[in-house]
Image (cartoon, rainbow, N blue to C red; front, top):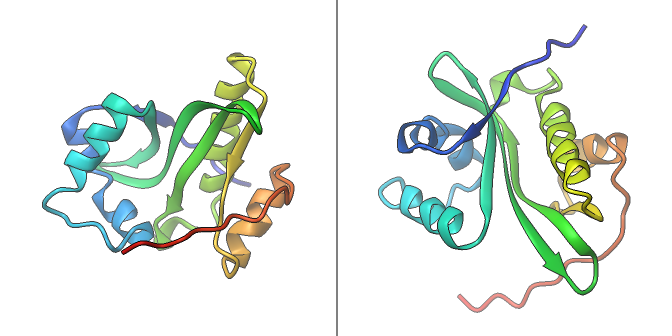
Length: 145
């Protein structure tokens, strides 16, 4: 039996600080000294939101997402970031966060929830496919740095 965890909107500096371990696991290139500034700018200017599962004073899983419009997909939620601490994997936290974001999208009468994942991340791909996601595109990048 999987436990239903409480999902919170992460908005304050202290709540964001509680997410460092899980964010750095997913995005190891981030610098601990300025990552909160980047998230703050994304929240202020790009409609970026964080939903997190907090246990004690630590975020153990989070989803970072944007509400946006696209000519291709319509009015959507794009999930930029989704990660669970290794110690909490296999408990259904990622699936619960995906359902949470889907509820937001449905309540806003949005057209889709979209995300990208690495080709090699088979474990996450299984979770996404089981959660109703379909292979819909090939994401390409022209890296400049």
